[in-house]
Length: 176
Image (cartoon, rainbow, N blue to C red):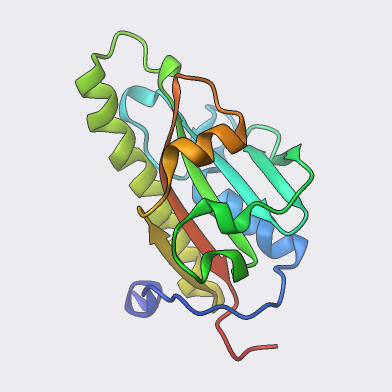
């Protein structure tokens, strides 16, 4: 109840980076494996497609979160945070998460179903991030205002991978 009461969007971030343990917990809360025996995840996924990949943009580069190994895989060694959205604060947020649907994982789904399910599946993950941030005193805001074609090109996504949402995370402005 406390996390729900504290959940809110914030568009002002401190420059303070998230320590590795906080970032690790953030990603696990977002879409980590919480049932190792079955591979079940912290967020639901329609038909268990698990089509959403969580990408992490920091000052150090761009990473893809591997939930099964609970690890980050570096994809780019440059700062692309400012390109993960069109708002002025995006480049200043220490972490920008980008939710990408890999539509090739949605076997037997029509194009309409792929669009219909990938949005809510990304939304479940974003809400987990909101609740984690509320519980940890972090600031966050989910964003749909993204230049998707430009970001997909920068991230070197395949044609069947689509940027769904982005989410900025960091300490609230004014904290050190």
